[in-house]
Structures are given as C-alpha cells and as structure tokens.
Image (cartoon, rainbow, N blue to C red; front, side, top):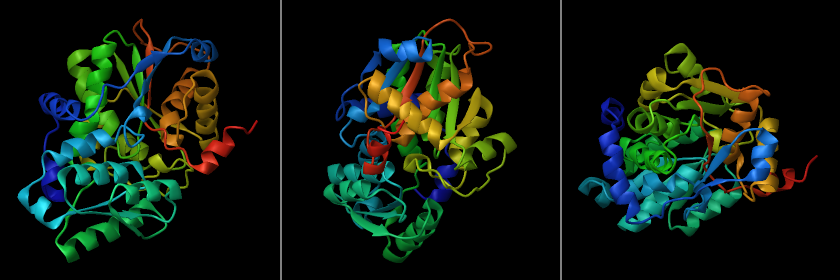
Length: 329
C-alpha cells in the first residue's frame, strides 16, 4: 500500500475485529492485572495491561503479525523498508520473518543499541542514519524508492489495526473501565483505543500521554493540523518529530484529553512499575502511568465515570541506561 493511499483509508472497528482474528493465531492474549502496592501509591484502582510479555517485548508486534498476513505480491517480491527507533522496527522484522520476505530498517543514531541488535537478530538489515526519527524516515523513503522495496509507514492502516487489537482485548477484559491512559508516539495505539472504546465502552475516557520533550503529536492534536517539533526525549519509543495524518484524524474527534509529561516523570513511573508492580518498562511503556499521575495531582479526574483505570505498559525493552536510572533516587 502506497503512503498516499494509506492516509486516505478509514480506520474501522470492524477491521480491528478482523485483525484480531489474525493476531490471535500467532500471539496470546496479554494479562490485565491489578497490583495492590501500585493502587496504594496512585490512590486508585489501576489495571496494568502487560504488553511487554509479547515476543518482541512490545505491543507493536501485533502490527507486524497483521502486516505479514496482508502483504501484497509486490511487497513479498521486493521486500519491506521502514524507519523506527526500535519497537516498530522489531515488529516489521518479526512480520517479515513470518512472511519469509526481506526487511530493511533505517534507525537513527539515537536508537538504543539493544533495539538495533534485536532487529538484526530477527533477520532484518539495519541501516543507521541521521540523528532523529525524522532523518531516518527521509532516508528510508529514499531507500525504498531506489531499491523497489515497499515503504511501511509506522501508521500504515494494517499496522494500526493490528495495534488496536490490544484495546479490543482490554475492553473485553474490563468493559467497566472509567479511563485508559495510552502513550503516544505516532498515535497508533491511541487511535486504536478510540476506535474500540467507541463501540465497546463509550463511557470510558481515552487519554493520550506524550513526552513534553517530543510534543509533535500533542501540537498536532491541539492545532488540528499536522505539526513538527524537535525530539529530545530519552524515551525512544516516544521520540517522534511529526504528527501523522491517519492517526490524528481519529484522535482529533475522539481523544478525551492529551497530557504531556517530563522525562523525569516517566522515569519515576518506571520505578513505580518496577517496585510496585513487578514490571520492567521502557520509557514509552511507563508513560501511561506517568500521565495518570500527572493528570490526577491527588484529585479524581473531572467527569470520570465510576470504575477502574487502565494504563497500557506498551513495552519492556528498557535500555541499559533506563535500567540504571531505576535505582536513582
């Protein structure tokens, strides 16, 4: 699917359900668990959706599995090219291996080494280019054009529908949720959460969370137009430099709120998950909890219906630096 065609596709709940049938053949349902110590720390009933237990350590593998089952003949023949700071890269590499096709992933120099190694271990070629994800994206598109490979945008509809299966699981596991906090990089998870919430749990609030040091998505949502912004966040999974039209089209009318959090707040949330919920989370994986903590500030969220809150721990691929910071006071 061309990038231009992908941006005009409408994302639908029915397509999420169809994607779930594909994903379920390859991946298990992930746990949704309460952790009493975390409830006490946050002063509310919090359910953690543990996506880090999936094969690549991230919810994004769902997109790769769905992509693998929906490749065109041209994509199979000429291979895939994408760009990523890590988890989307592993997702596409995993899907390419399932489908038996070539994959090349362009990663910025800022991508954690452990994620580059994970992509290579899955059989994909890694090209390191540029300082930011935006730089890597430009190079990846040029590489696809030069080689005949198909560029797989992080917001390809097949990827988004695959990611959304996490929220189909979530709302089937806990239809009584009052709110769900979702980290936002490209916005695929939050868009998927909105699509499923509207059908299965219309009273639940969906609240996006982004690093304040990489606010392109937040700016795009606030302005109603696609905006760019520099990324200086330590959370590689949130290090996007632009809003994405396909996901923003869903978020503009459906996302209840959008919270920005500092990198230090993300680190503190990661410590809480490690110490109070027995969970290792990378920065993006801890961002949802950081958003809940920042949003509450000791008060119950205005307009919230009764019920527990869910936070999505989207990934467990913590770098050595992130693990070291868990011990910081």
